[in-house]
Length: 212
Image (cartoon, rainbow, N blue to C red; front, side, top):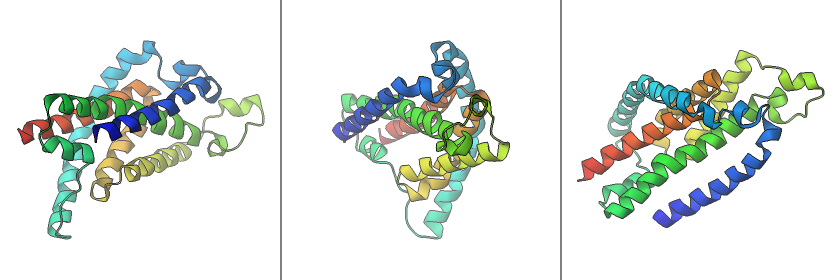
């Protein structure tokens, strides 16, 4: 599983590196406009931690409701991510740390760059990112609130579905909504990465200690 996770991370990293080369053409202001400059890191970390404290109780509530419905209505169990399954089998310390670093650091960075930094940014453009700007004015036109929320909803649904965990769809969708809204309000990808990494870290830490 560690090899598969590492290979997946490498593939995502290669895609992200390609995006990095193109970002100055995708976003006005380059990394600063994208919300991923080093200058924006401290504020992003603070915003991400604050966002986690706000959204985490709601995630716990929705997760509890979903678990109750799955267990008592469908008479089955909530799906568990493969990484969490591996941690529950009590692997070695080195294996646990490798899985933790991949899921708690690498995955949030790569996923936020793709889902919020690239996909949400693209969908918020005129023509949903598929139409070439007709003039310099088009590059600076801010889409309507409805357009921006539609982009957040679409990306959130894709994010939740991409994890292939139907029973956890609503939880992941709510997390993605929070991440999308945070990016929309702050324009800071570090904030999204921090919130996502904190969520993954808390979940994985609870599994590690629960399995001991």
